[in-house]
Length: 474
Image (cartoon, rainbow, N blue to C red):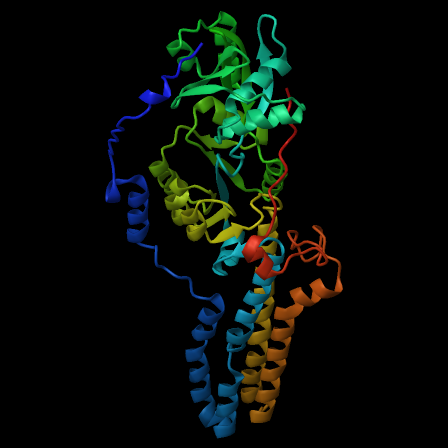
């Protein structure tokens, strides 16, 4: 049986109707919204510099007051106390050291301010596809009818999909390879965009696609298949029907490939008392099933791309500080709206450009470790604040009560500077002299052993690997 026209008839004309172009496309509209967002060009000042500037006027005032009581020497000593000025030096040093620690753990922190915001986060919102699930699904089960076996049906389906590159085709072919099946070559093929395809294989006509495709081909759908479709959909699965010579031979049930590291990350985030949400454009049942599988208590289904940012604003209006994790072009506005944004390596360019933090290993592994790193960063910052302020206050008190002079002021200032630098360097010093594990006392749980940790240049170039796919079952 031949269903392709002879080669002499393949010449012709193709008419393409473009409904949207230029500034009317969705991508252009998203870029326009980002460019005009009120806070798009807002930059965060370093907290160290803010604190340092805050004490300039009080120091000048104290120096003026000291002039009639302690003389010129005492007034100069107060000026040299430089309350908070050490923070201008140790603040950037601390920031660079913690950015290096993050890079060793496969994390690119694009804005150091993100480490200050992380401990204040109340809720983490995940976009479903590409973050909690992998792009490629997995073959969950092969349902057969009549005299077919699961291997025979999978072999035919893999042959039909062998020249396709979409995720479902790759999942079916991968399942066939996993079961060591020989995939025959197809002779002829016809494609119905969005519905399915039809091929000639070993003198049989094989069709693979949706129920609508089978209806278009005049293939009768058995009642058992319709019942199976409802059951699979309730579990968040999808069905691909396979017909041979005009009769349904079986169905391949596909399940979303949940990231293998997602469950562990969700548990760790729950332990921190964070509220977790899923935002998905999928239907209610698949989204709810995924939320229940991962133990996530809140979810939003049937969400349009332009509505994601509105949901983030709604959570913020309820008093929550939100971290959004997304990877698609339609996540860019939500990434910009959130108090903190995280994306994964391999995501769309606009997502990684917009996100404040990028996981360079393209996984959620040790995602909660970001919060541990941020806790350590802020604890180090508080210690630096004390090391910078206390010597200066001792100098000012000493000028009025103990007649401190310039020498004492310089010595105490330098003592505070040395303590601040030592504290800012302490994370890297501890890393060099102690084995690093997920349970380090410093709380930086995302660090790897230094013998295996890539350098920052390697990470920026091609760090991390693709997480292993779960086993394929048939």
